[in-house]
Amino acid sequence: MTAIIGFLNKVFWGYVLIYGLIAVGIYFTIRLRFQQILRFGEMMRSVTAAPAGDRGGISPFQALCTSLASRVGTGNIAGVAVALVLGGPGAIFWMWVVAFVGMATAYAESTLAQLYKVREAGSEADAVYRGGPAFYIAHGLGLPWLGAVFSVCLILSFGLVFNAVQANSIADAMTGAFGIPKPVTGLALAALTAIVIFGGIRQIARVAEYVVPFMAGIYILVALFVLVTNLTEVPAMLYHIVANAFGLAEAAGGVAGGLAAAMLNGVKRGLFSNEAGMGSAPNIAAAASPNPHHPSSQGFVQALGVFIDTILICTCTALMILLSGVYTPGGELTGTQLTQAAMQEHIGGIGSWFVAVAIFFFAFTSIIGNYAYSEMAMSFLGIGNRTGLTILRSLVLAMVIWGALQAVSTVFDLADASMGLMATINLIAILALSGTVVTLTQNYFRQRDAGREPRFHIADHPEIARGVDADIWK
Image (cartoon, rainbow, N blue to C red; front, side, top):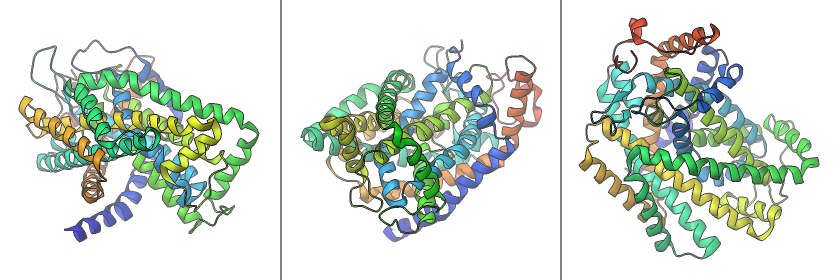
């Protein structure tokens, strides 16, 4: 079994996804006419719009914060450091490239999630929208069995194992910085998680709405402080990043592979961090009531999420490390330890504490964000009732405690394979539905360019009406 899982991971992460995610991102970037640059203002407008009057969904800002809760995790701190050590400064440039094309992919998958969402049966106050890749695979492509496979993979990877990994990172950070025993961290983390996830999607969205801007804002402010205090070194550092990315300057310390190492590690870090195309964020995008009332509106919101995660937060970590003087390409100091050492250079002894607290917030919000995704998958499988969700929530809490107590590398490979399969399924699905994405986008900008607020009416587009809830988009 171990050999089979290892082979699947080699195929998925060594070939299919590394090239597939980039290729799909380039495809949508070209087909949507570089809208992540030319229409960037639309992203800001969609996020800052007032909440829609529709009580069935969460607000666009809550959907952005919940997706960022999952996207922004320990990889933004430790993963970036690993990419720098293995790929050199040039890895950061390729991380930016991945984010640029990934914004188009994120737009496409979240727009589809909005179009094919359904309203959960229940009272006006309790009912929520459900949707995501499983729903557009089933309703848009007519392949419910494939949607079920996707859902199972999502629950296994995001709902369970990845939450154990995040808990393990928190426990290690708390022990290293404050000497807190891992069992204490595990139980406290499980208690906090329970308070949030037993409140359901709305509770998760409310918590994310406050915690995510706070944690991201503080982290970015510290990075700005570092940049200002090292302002004279910034131009040379930016040149070094670009030059190293194209092999024009060798990384000190001799990173093996040069250009290839920079590209591979930057691409991997970007893909793993922003999750664009993997089919995770669309699950919460579907829960939103967009304003304006158009599927494309939430697509813009989630494209902005990729920008914030990679272009802003990952770049903050990279710059703080590169400006610290403790970084050595190919060196032994890597991961969280490298980031902590860099912060100590910038802000003194509290640097390691700051990183530990940042890891706590980043990882904790990832746990509740990942759970939100798996709740959507449970709904698609028909087991999203009170009993089914109670069992899922209990399993999540058990995985959090277990993950805090020991490393989870044994099952992490299995979760990686599951995520690889779900991402492959999602990429095929959004390519097959790319014509629908283009139709929706053209409809949106046709109205915007005419000076009207975009509104989507499915009756005007019978060619894409199959599987769409007409009551939602009437």
